[in-house]
Length: 301
Ligand code: PAF
Image 1 (cartoon, rainbow, N blue to C red):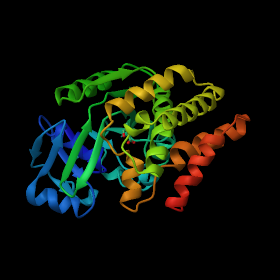
Image 2 (cartoon, protein in one colour):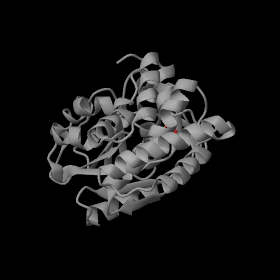
Image 3 (cartoon, rainbow, N blue to C red):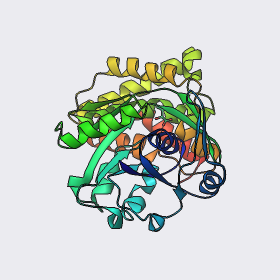
């Protein structure tokens, strides 16, 4: 398969390196990461250990083929800009798969790309951008892919096979929208807490007060999502969130990594969307509100 991975942060680089084993992959990212990959290849250490000479570019204009798959792994606040650059790359069958955190990506991609091209996914892998050219795979997770209309299409089956062949444990879902909501609940409970405290994910379960706080956030976010008509249970989401924390205990969440790099965070696409829904539905949003304030105090938006 011919693949463009658009967004070569920690997750995009990890998936790009793995997919490059059996596929033609080009990474789209920024200097100095792209420069380093061009010079020395992309090095993955931690749970996965490999070095891959994978082509990397800073602009889609440098890509000379039309890919079968564009894996979108940019931060949610960059989704609109990124998807506005994809059109010249598309052929009739190109799949554009959003593998991002946040609740507003599909809507943003839909402003630039015809719906028939778009699929979505979620992943609970933990990855750390160690330095340009080097990514640490900090925690093995699971990946779920799905069609927006819930169909178990032929192209979705092919995609799942390609991911599994690359060593990325992947399942397909007939309700990917719900998986995106579930992932956002998990992110809402882990990312701002670890982002503000500057701790690894695992610390949330080492400190009883933090464990309780994460449970409160998770319950509040689940109730907000339920009020919107999405079937989720707070108890099950707490269990799932703790499982992700355990699996990625050694990871610094993507929100903390953004803060450490002096970059904007995805707080608005995660807790921000939940807060706005909660306010509309007249559901308590106190925990999400406080977390947003705390994160904004570190990186004013
Ligand atoms: O955003 C993140 O950091 C990741 O989605 C996860 C799974 C919480 C691991 O750190």
